[in-house]
Amino acid sequence: MVVDDEAHILSSIKRLFRPFGYDTVTCTSAREALDIIKTSGPFHIVISDFRMPETNGVEFLAAVRACAPDSVRMVLSGYADAGSILNATNEGHIIKFIPKPWDDAFLLKSVAAALNGGQSAEAAEASQIQMPEGRHD
Amino acid sequence: MSTFLEPPDGLESGNRDELLEPQCDIPILLVDDRQVNLHILEKLLHGMGYLLVLATSGKEALKETLKRDFAVILLDVQMPEMDGHETAKLIHSKPKSKDVPIIFVTAADDAESQIKSYAAGAVDHLSKPVRPLILRSKVEIFAKLYRQRRRIEQHKNNLEELVELRTGQLLETATKLKVRNEELNEHRKNLESTNLQLEEWIANEIKMSREKDLMLLQQDKLASIGKLAAGIAHEINNPLGFIMCNLGTLKKYTNVVRKYLQAQEEVLKTYSPEKQYKQLEELRIRIDLPFILEEDLDSLISESLDGAERVKRIVLDLKDFARSDESAMQTTDLNHCVQSAVNMVRNEIRCVADLDLSLGTLPPVNCNPQQINLVVVNLLTNAGHAMTDHGRISVTTSCVQERILLSVADTGKGIPSEVIGNIFDPFFTTKPVGQGVGLGLSTSYDIIKNHGGEITVFSEPGVGTTFTISLPLGGTEVMSE
Image (cartoon, rainbow over all chains, first blue to last red):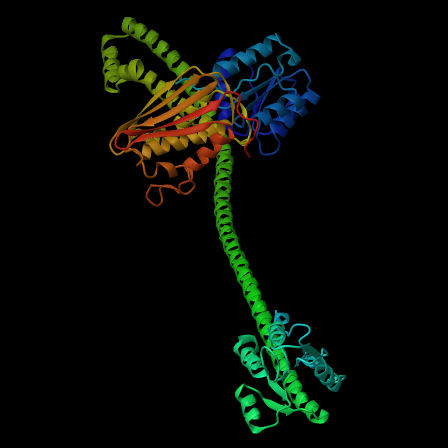
């Protein structure tokens, strides 16, 4: 399940995941997403944008945790300052904070790792936050 | 002050009569060679308030007149050794006694004797036997004269004393006034200098508060730029996210499509009728498919990805430059700061100078990266503005003895020696109006100082300028606001 208020983001991620055979469900509203999770969930992975009109990603993922505790939760955000990363990891028990624009390979690797169940939420916490890339030139 | 002009004690009118009316006896000299005659005269004049001095010879009389002043001398004419007339002449020849009145007392009553007496300087002439009343009244006349004279003298003395006293007081007052005047002058000078200091202080305060206002304004501006940058960054990152992701997918699609078309091409070449294949071949050439598929599609996508990557970096720089937690000291890679700053101004500088970066291996330094960024941006911007022709700007970092050195050297027009002492002053600028208010170097100076570092300048007009910043590795305990 991928949630973002920007439809283009959703379709680009859907395209990215398609070759790997993931059953990707997308939603532009956090409230709708919760309904879908309740009716047709639970999902293995829930990836959410951080800044959305109705609610923020951390609040949404906290709600997801309440109704589907076994889902692996990740945040995908363009608003990557230290404070929001901390909130995301502490309040939403989120195992990954992926900054926008994301690195495709890193996102795919994170999803694959979560699906393989190789890491519990606790073990992954805080250690797997990808920081903005450094400069190379 | 008025007290100085009041009459001194003891000279008031109430005391004056007492002083001018001497209680002492009036001195009268009686001269006769016979004791009996002296005795008679003494008796006659006794009890009238006179001090009677007796002399039995002219010599004795002369001695007495040298000792004191007499109101009158009663002088016997017939005396042995020196007679009265001779004695009188001698008495009147002395300066002290030249005016003393002399009455001759003589047995001779003839006119010739009288004339002789007056010729000898007598004021009067009494014949023996003396009539008491006449004697007394004549003596009293001179006693009165004496008293008056003494009174006048006393008066004169008092006046002189008074004048002297007053003069003294006036002099004293004048001296005091002079001292006072000097004190006042001193005081005035002190006040004037205090006033001057106050004026300087006020001018300085005004200047400082104006500087502070402008600094605050600058900081406000930076803070709002920061918020704006963070907002813009987020807005850009969303579309950038799917653009980059889609470009990645497109690249994969392209490969897939190309593979499929290659396979199809093999099949067509082998199995399709020659005519149709030729038509297809013509179409392929006409629509430029070999170029599109084999050459351009890949570079189109990779160039687009490259562009997107650059946008991504710019946004990161923007966020680095104006992060919301601006005042935090943190362990920083200074080369990263330099790189960030360079990226910010690269476009501005590109058209006036080539940029050389020579970044050494640096240990992490404790500093405020946003502020250091700002300093490097300021130095680079100034270097750009210093260019007359297309020049070169070199940025160097190194670590020497627990300090990090960062230098920005340009080949611009240089700083004239007469203004080089002012370049770190607030509002000092040589740039044309509108190109800078003159706060860049001043702000940079403050920032480096707050970091416990130093910023120095070396400039040679016509050759170029080098700014060197030296920062301690540990930063400073004093945090800048």
